[in-house]
Length: 272
Ligand code: NAP
Image 1 (cartoon, rainbow, N blue to C red):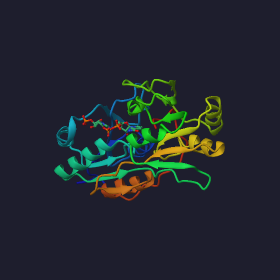
Image 2: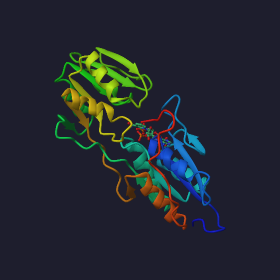
Image 3: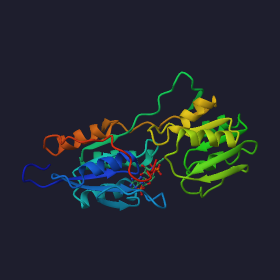
Image 4: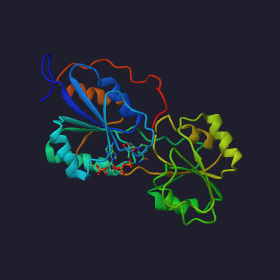
């Protein structure tokens, strides 16, 4: 397996939908020694595309992914999906085990709690809904997929922000704000004030693209209900930086590490 001076390129599948996945695809695409395809679920109507080859849509469960890996001669997988995309991560880990294809999990760290933060950590969306019931005006920034979990809360008003509209049930009292970050701290403070928000509700997604809301809540002294990350499947290599993933890929390809600048500016509107 793997490329050498004159050998074949290493066939890499990057499971994406995150900025880190795009950064990694940007590093490896076009580099001698790598043949990269990025995979997106197809959830967002107008996704930000990574450099290089892209496929879109589910694989059809673990078996579908296993077959896809074999059919496409994939030699290594980088699971760079969002920290809350637990199903595809579990499928990737299982398919890697079934096929013997090495896999790396790339996950950015969660947000660190600061001394001035009033956080209420909850294990899942059901617990988040129970916590939200204790507030009057909640800023709900969890994307559109789990908004239905809050649909029974008829005494709490929600400001729901998502890239695309929720398709299922929604809470009876709400305002829907369709927007894609990144947002500035000033914008987030203005939103909290305009809508007299008394709690922010978010996943512990981590990353600086959506961190402004956390800074804004801290500034305004507003409590934050933080949904903890689901556990990662066991048995895979792990890194929390793009640089670490790049090192891993270079090592797998059997070539020296190629120096890479991974902290450059974000280009275009990013998926979160
Ligand atoms: P999920 O619940 O873990 O996965 C559900 C199903 O969607 C999977 O079983 C798979 O379908 C398909 N899928 C997910 N990610 C895929 C990918 N990268 N390529 C091909 N198929 C994929 O996933 P999710 O939470 O809906 O997230 C979907 C995508 O959005 C991911 O790429 C993730 O990185 C990105 N994203 C998620 C969040 C979030 O908060 N969850 C936030 C920002 C971006 P099959 O079983 O048919 O293969």
